[in-house]
Length: 142
Image (cartoon, rainbow, N blue to C red; front, top):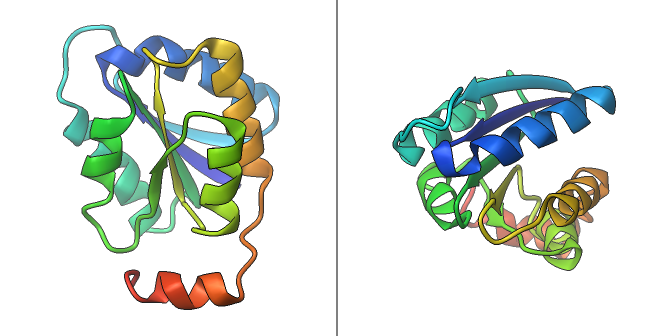
């Protein structure tokens, strides 16, 4: 599985932690930036992750900003993206199981490192349950 990873300056440090963790867990990662703590515009990096999924280069994406809200809004502009701003393992599980989320958004300023890692593990490890949920997703997806 290939995962696109992106952040703005507010999420840069957490992105680097997650990148190391995911690489050590043998996931294939494409880091689309940002590459420093210098101020950048989060929609630019949301677009880069979305493009990786839209071209089927990556199956999943993770976006990190200060709260996760801006990245979620920016990513969800495309109808083939189902970005979920998750704040605990339960929301991560439900976003995959019921909503088939293909982008996880995290808030670096509201989550600690350990909580973020637990959310990522849960999110990646949860499968979409299909069934009645598929019918609902089809109403707003490509």
